[in-house]
Image (cartoon, rainbow, N blue to C red; front, side, top):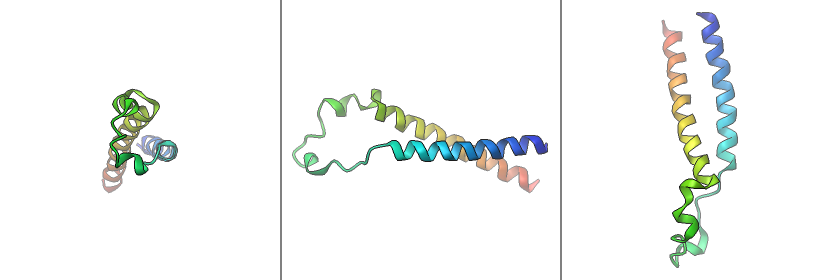
Length: 80
């Protein structure tokens, strides 16, 4: 059981470093003055889900869920 716990801890450390890197690679959400004039509904706004930024957002969501599940498993395992 101790080997599984150590593997989960190592996976959590690697996941947290990867999650930090992915979050730092994302663009900021402030659109500047372009959003006032309605320039946010341009071509890039419509295909954002298929762009690199869209993939980073999806990867972030998946990794956050895995991070929380892994954290809960480690916490429950340490209680018992």
